[in-house]
Length: 83
Image 1 (cartoon, helix red, strand yellow):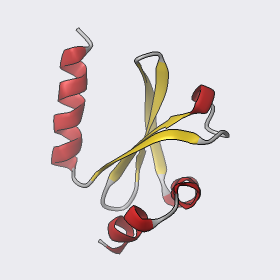
Image 2: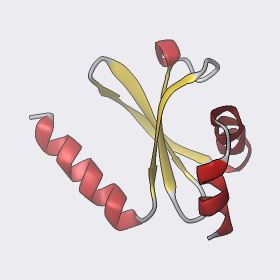
Image 3: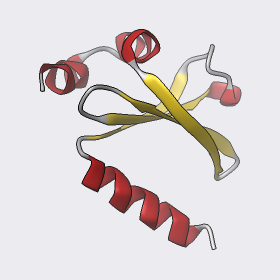
Image 4: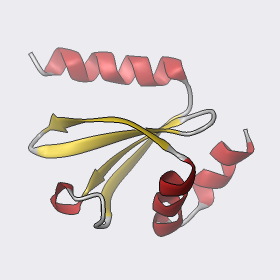
């Protein structure tokens, strides 16, 4: 629980550093011409879009999912809009 609350208040650069140190990259997918990366931390998930789809560059967007239910609902919505 602490990680989720602390992560919310981290700077964007600290969030990315934390993801690289503590997170597990689950995968990547294409959406709207960008590669979207999904990371798992202890009790939440983070989706990241990087500049030029390069994980070594700065993130354009970070989206946090606080539970597996939220993640599933989001992915279902994305799946339906893909077709």
